[in-house]
Image (tube, rainbow, N blue to C red; front, side, top):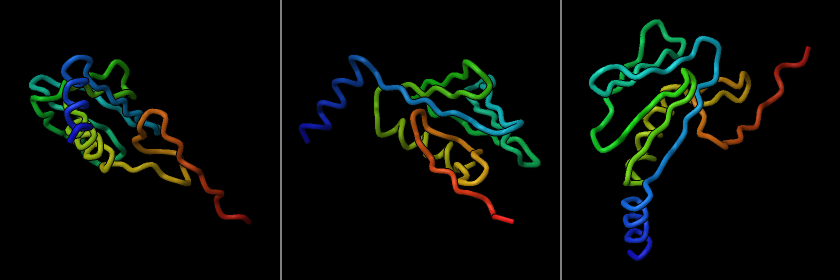
Amino acid sequence: MYILMLQASLGVLIGYRKQLNVVGIGYQAEIQKGNVLILKLGFSHLVRIKVPQYLEISCPKPRIILLKGINLQKINNFAYVIRQLKLPSAYKEKGIYLSGELVVTKQGKKT
């Protein structure tokens, strides 16, 4: 209970940020009018996600997504929703990564 109150007060005073990195050839992210996040992730179609009003989202570069808000749990939940669209691959090093995340890559098939 005490930790939640501390997180809430820090969120109001400072705010929380989370950065997602989109890694892969042709993978891009952009923001459209009306708070809609558009992702190009190698599918045959564009992925559109409506951003909740309690979050501020920005794309300073086509491969970086910044989430800002006052509630840490809601930021983490939305980051998880975005990340589920293209999980990091252990073989090709492609996908959506959290900043600072270390994914161990595996060696491919030996011939």
